[in-house]
Length: 445
Image (cartoon, rainbow, N blue to C red; front, side):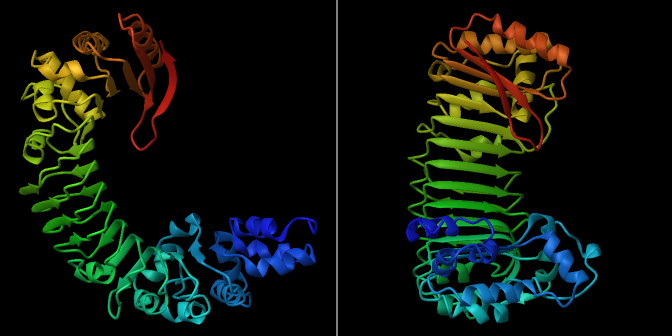
């Protein structure tokens, strides 16, 4: 080990999954001991074993003391990541009997003990707090960070209650992630003011919002997941390219994102839609309560090439109210790729059953078709797939996913009969299940 170049050793030590292992590395040889103090990236994780040991042995070194000791002895750090293990994030109030704050990692007093030693070099900072201790303790850590970390580029905070009081403008910050956060900024006005140069913004499960408005001139990518039902949602971002938005029932949804090219929208409903013209939109994934809302949201999107649709509700497979493909191609006349989730596929099959599935002039552009099948009648499903293959003259690939709980004999028979269809392109199949990733099994050419 002593023969390896110090630069290589430094790279190895900087990649440790848990930097507490540095202590053991220092005992290995003098070179590792010397190099270990020059690592630029530190990751410290409190595991369930450490948590349980600290409760059984009150005299053991607290995790926060360990953090402070590590950071204050390292002068070259540009990245610090502190957190609790996933096994701890799942603990409830019933599992924790004490009222300690030994794992409240966004406690401003604790952070101030070590932040000053790395404030000039720090570029990336991440906290995964212990929700049981953090949820009822308001943290002023954002104020502390904004006043000291003038070179910080990326900030991640999860499982905390954050105050915006005293937060000053951070022009260096380009990436911000807030996940499972109670935020004292109901309209996001302070967030917009203090972080004006954001290019990447992730707001995932941020509560306490009333009329939130995102307004960033330089924002390129945004993920926004809202669990409550705010009065309105507004996104004003002239340079935004990618947006993933998941919300419930806002009264008003306003998007002013003229350069948006990749849009992922999950929405139950909204009383009012104001979406400015999206001239650059090419990839669209939409999950709606009612697919007829597509017309309200997107009167006509001629630029969209890849479209993925699903429904937030389980759709009955009888009595479709409109010609399915006609609706899709009236709104998206130039798509070459179409992917249907299980809810929308059911609606498509319902249209087919009652004779309301028309070819539509746009079918000739379709090259790639994917469907999450709900097979209640094999003959109907086969007829529908055959109809699509016969109607789409340019179709090159058909990808079919079967529900995992379908009877194996029925599934095997369906796959065998699909392979016998007169299709010259690629036929791909796999399995899907709610809450799980799709599993692709085979390609039939």
